[in-house]
Length: 373
Image 1: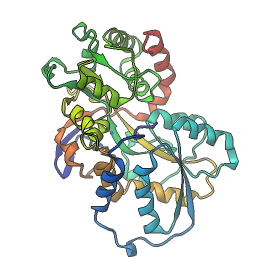
Image 2: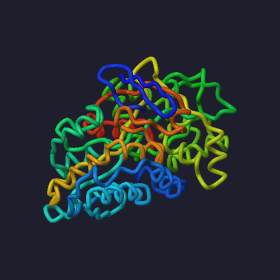
Image 3: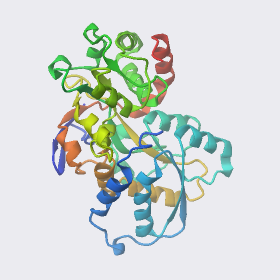
Image 4: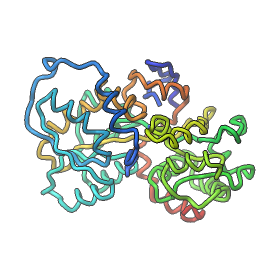
């Protein structure tokens, strides 16, 4: 397990081997804090003199499932440092994967960037990526958060803990994900649909570590405790907690960070009524996942694509993820934002995310069997 301790402005990790500090649709579509806050965070970073990076030139084509306003400042910085022009096509993960698949050898894409290891593994299984070897990528990204053959690499980390209503829940009553299946939470749990890849990957991780029977028993109990039919996105689960529609929910951390810094007062107020509980701290640790990217199978600008991936795991870019997107950096030693540091230390599950794709189909079937719609 990766044991993580947090201090403002720094990060340390205990254990062997050291893991990252622990975070789209996809995940960031529609986050209202994005443009102004992220741009300000990036502008505040130390500027790296152009002389430190030799100009390369040329171009690289990126298919991205991340909202353009949250990734473009990084891409612009990469261009300023290298002279490599980045051509960006943004869309949902499913649309971009199908487009890449239909284009085949004629695709202009050099990189596919998306969220969740489930999506990354699916693209690998479709043979949309090519394996690459990069000493910089392998040094910056812990083995658990990249494909063993180099088809994809995690770029940022997110955790999926339990969130609870501050005014109605004693956090001492919860310690594990298993607790959510206990009868005491009947009618008190909010969660997204089983069609959401975040939930699929979480269940896939449980299958990998606990097996199908134990995971199915847990999921059946969880469904029995639903306060309402699964609906909406992660921010909607936070709003439901604040409105008293449920007491506990499963939510990715960066959504809470985004709402704390949202322009809308209603979102900030809802976030203030919710707190994070880090489950399974005496067991496997909190479920974590990544956003990531890989070089496409038919990349015409392969070298430039590798350079861009290496830049995205650099200290400069990793600080951007921490400050601008409220995600945890994958690169060990990168400082996190005050918001993330304020949530405290936690132990993260160090399961190799490459196995999530192997168990995705079984996870979907299991969720269907227990009535998780």
